Structures are given as structure tokens and as C-alpha cells.
Image (cartoon, rainbow, N blue to C red; front, side, top):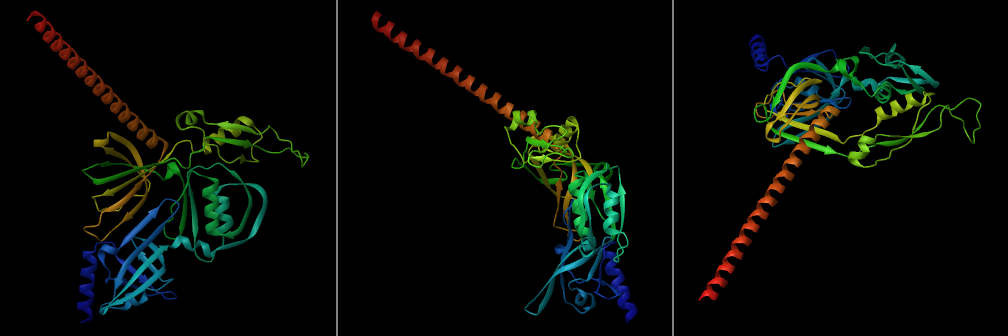
Length: 398
């Protein structure tokens, strides 16, 4: 009987392919396969430097062991990754019992690692220095890797929080950093090291039937006051700087979108005015953000960081985009994936070029329409004048 059951279970798992949901209870070493779940409910969600979680609905059946193990802080293993259950909602309706599960990627457990000491003062760090400061010797088994080249940066008062705060500090200090963990290995990538050029292509109406492009100008900043390092021994009431505070303006952005002043940027790293100006310009949000979301007809797992060619031919919009987020339904035959694509400067410029081209086309059409109307009006006027003139001449001759 047990052999038959194992054979049936193996057959069921084979049907599901290599993607199997496994459950391990809190304080347990036993791992059990979960087979009683609603296929369309399983969704894996990832967003760059933000969300990474798994959600699904399971139901009670004869083989209840894995179902009973689904409780808060239990581990769920799927597609080579570990997730920790944070929300479990049980519902009983007409004798049918279900659990709605939301589990976050195990890397979020970094919040349990505390660095209670603070490295006070402003000091220079590498990305590896920050990771080491928070993670070295941790008791939860986390390790780290750094991929790509990062310049060293100054950080004030590092520490005094969780290792998850340390990752936030990395993202804030190095805006070109991408944190993409694999199980308990915290991998920090420089953006170009993270991107994957696999020759992928998305063609509207062939690979997707739904493309949404949303432009948002609320975060535009194209002028700020730049304040560099103070000189030692200055007057506290009237500090002396290596260079006077000055306005930095992205004139191209101002010409296109109008003036959008932002908060002052103060950075003690800079004693050179030109270097400060270059840095401030690189930190400005000079263009509206562009969010592109597609519904994919192909139920394959999206590749985080993949750069693909997007073609929306009815809109004459063609550009290269990067996968920066997705919701993937691995077991569903009907639920399409949702993929969020990047808002890089190149993509925005392509979008604006397309809009400008469309606007120019509309203006040309309007001008042509006005010209045609004027021509028709002129012809009608001449015809009317000729008719009236002919009638008057005829009456005169009569």
C-alpha cells in the first residue's frame, strides 16, 4: 500500500515538473511535499530591491501532513528558493478547509540579525565592508557576494540596526546596486553585472496582448543647491567651505519640463566644485519616470534583469527594456504572467521620441485638414460668387 502511494505521489510530482512545493515546519527537520493546493493560486512575485515572495492557497485532503505544517514561520521551498511563511489565513466553508499562505524570501530574515554597535563618524566604505560589518559571524548562516565594480563611498554612523537596514544603506549609498539573493547568499550586483542580454524579444500581439505605459512627472527635480565640505576651524555661525554653495541646474530638463527645484544636496566628500556639480547632476531625476507593464502570453518564468527588445508596432514604439519585476503563475494554464519593465533613460527617450513623432503627425494632419477646409471653402465661395454674378448678368440682359 505504501509503495503504491509513493508511486502515485511520484507520478503526481512528475506531472508538476521540476517545480514542487515542499514544506518544513518550524523547529523541524522533516520536509514534506505539498500536493493539495489550487494551481491557479500559486504566484511568485519579485520586484528589484523590493518584494520577493510566494503566495498560494492550500486545501485539506486525505494527506494532511504538509497542510498541517503550513503555519507562520514554517519554511516553504519552491524553485530552488526558501520562503518563510509570514501570514496564514484559515477558512472553513461548507466542510472545505483552506489556508491562504504568504511567504517572503528567506533573505528578509536579515531583520533578525542586529548590529548593535555603531561605527560613529563619517568614514569611507566599500560594499563588501558594509556587508561584512553586518553579516560577519551571523548565526543564521547567511553569506554574501559582490559582483561588479563599486566606488568607495562615505557613510556616517554605520550600524545600530538590523542587517536588513544594512542592505537599505547599500541601496541608498550606491544607487546602481541590485540586491538579488539566492537562498541565504546575499548577492549585490552593480547594475551592468546584473543585466542579462539573452536576445529576448517581446512583440505586441504576438507575445503579449496587453501593454501599459505610464508616465509620471511627480518626482522630477532639475535644480538643487549644492553644498560641499566645510573647512576645519571655521566659525559655527558662519561656516567656511572649500567652495561656496551654488545652484546646479539641468538646463535641458528645465527647457523641456519647466523648473522643478529640489532639496539642497550636502555632501562632505567634495572639496572640488566641478566634481560636486557632476555628482549632483547624476543624482537628479531630470525626466518623468516611465513604467511599462505587459501581460505575457508565455507562461515561462521571467528572468530577472533580462534586457529584451520591446516592439509595440501600432504605437510605433520600439525600445530595449529590462525586467525589473514580475508576477509569475507557475502552475496555471490560464493565468498570464505580469512583467514590469524598466524606466531607463534610453527607454524614456524612445517613449518621448514616439510621442513627439505622433504629435507632429497629428499637427500635420490638422494642418492638412485645415488646408483642405480652406480650399473647399474658397472653391465654394468662388462657385457661389460665379452663380450670383451669372444670375445678375442674366437679369440685366433680360
